[in-house]
Amino acid sequence: MNYQTNFPTLQGIVSPEEWQARVELAACYRLIDAYEMTDLIYNHITAKIPGTDHLLINLYGLLYKEITASSLVKIDLTGKILYKPDTDYGINLSGYVIHGAIHEARPDVGCVIHTHTRAGMAISVMECGLLPITQTSMRFVDHLGYHGYEGPAIDLDERQRLAADLGPHNAMIFKNHGLLSCGPSVQEAFNTMYQLELSCRAQVDAMAGNTKLVIPDQAVLDKTANLYQPGTRRPYGVLEWPAMVRLLEAQSKTSGYPRFDA
Image (tube, rainbow, N blue to C red; front, side, top):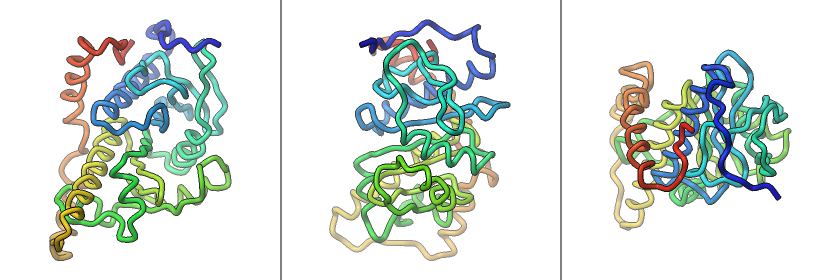
């Protein structure tokens, strides 16, 4: 079986727009790993190639820290593979069931991230959902969808319900399952996922203290949520991204793995 993990570079072979999308998406995979939001080889992040309806997704079998710009698979919204590196690794069916549904329903979305983190799964089973108990979690007040568990996401008829439950939001909790974020760009989707994950971790820690939790009044919650929306002050994730890339570049010198932009 051919399960290699090093692939010839596609730089100069694909369009400049596709190459940039590949580099940004590969960086996002590495960052999800760096901030401990991975689940072995599972989960997926997709990015739309600008000017097309084509998506990029990971090979199903690679660790996130192994993913490079040239190892990503190109698919259409139905999951049809348009390009794949020379390997026996394929793609995860759930990747295009979940992600394809959102990309198709939301033309404004350029990137979708799905995770199964310990904290995210813990919050997903709580009847109360995500509580606005920290400044970070207040960002999601009235800006968070919930999707009921229907089993592993492999049925195409679930796609419409997924998209409807997300609605206009850029974050969603899959009940009994995990987390999802999206955004116009990879940068913004990553920032949203980072904040959603941090909110879940803080809530799990706070609830473990077995003491009464303080929730500010609704006016404060509404004000805070508004201040953290992309159109209020700045599109969160864009300013942060160059620092994130510098982090990856520093890590690549000692990691032993190929650079994300290879």
